[in-house]
Amino acid sequence: MPQTILAPVHHELIIKKSRFLACVQPMPDRAGAQKVVAALRAAHPGAAHVCWSLLAGGQSAAVDDGEPSGTAGRPMLDVLRHQDLEGVLATVVRYFGGIKLGAGGLVRAYTDSVAQALLVAQKVPIVRQRHLACGAPYPLEGLIRRELDGAGATLDEVAHADSVTFLFHLPDDRAGALVARLNEAGNGRIAWIEAQEASGSA
Image 1 (spheres, helix red, strand yellow):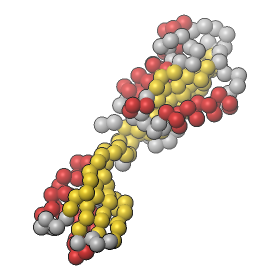
Image 2 (tube, helix red, strand yellow):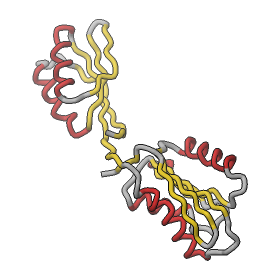
Image 3 (cartoon, helix red, strand yellow):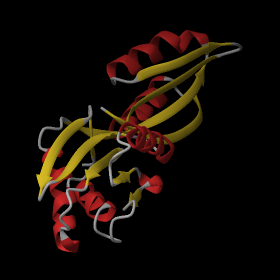
Image 4 (cartoon, rainbow, N blue to C red):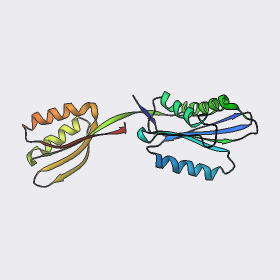
């Protein structure tokens, strides 16, 4: 099951006088990642490179920032993938120590920096959520509220008009059973408006 991390974690690695300052943190999209990288560049004006990788679905990225192609961003991304993470940004700020490490040495340095930081990360499973909406006559409002509560659903919004409309979400694996119970209890008087899925951490 894919996981994310709860909070940023850091690790510093020194190899042949080069300093590698790694940080791995939760990050949902590329725009947020680019802001973090820009802030790191501003905070470390003397750094030779600020390499980064983002694992976030279609917004994933791997950036070598001047290191030889494939020696920084991609190895960092591979570490995130290997640990089945999602919605996570890894950054490594490198201060060059005057001794070249070679392509293999760079790959190991960037890989180890991220892997070591992740050793202390608190990981949580990503639970896919199903968002649902239904409308029902007023006499069924209490019954629906009880069923949602019993299924562990989160009520996002309730609108009162000609009928009562409920917007709620719950873990995807519980959604089917809840819909079936409500359809049975409502005797066909509950109308389903929409159904969509979204990811979220538990």
